[in-house]
Length: 228
Image (cartoon, rainbow, N blue to C red; front, side, top):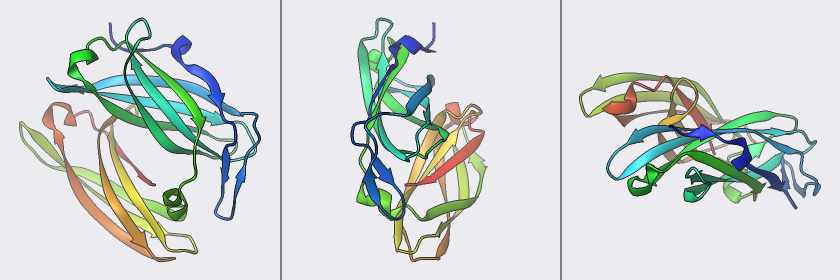
């Protein structure tokens, strides 16, 4: 029996005491009462070998409040009885006011315990506005393209192109995360271009490639890109 979504495992009482409001102009404390709702948490085993299993996840949150939220999500990988085999924390999830958004990621779970994985849980809590988040506020990504340019029995070379523009009034800097996802949005693999720095109004074309395991590369149907 494969991994499944288990609603009873999701710890949906969200701790949002002292959340911060994130805007280009100011930072302020949000009300103590949370308006964040966990809509769903799902998982999929993407890849496995003798060392680790790549377990990808998708988390959909909804912000019913009037303020933007900055959140951290603790994602746990559990056996059939809810015992935690491994976990990870995804930090700095920005959820605009009144919007529903899906976040995704993956963990490399030790192969010695991964076979016991049956369900996934999540706890969402208050996040922290960092200087890196502020520096990335004005950074925008567009003109995203990718194609498979080479393949063999070991890996597929997936090349990508994109444009990053600083739409803000200050110097911007961000890491650009490129995620290769399957048809349902689960991450197959990813790559990061670090420390992309742009003056106000400046744009830059970036290109590169990832070598993706041939056993799973055929699952890739799109790429998702975020400056963060």
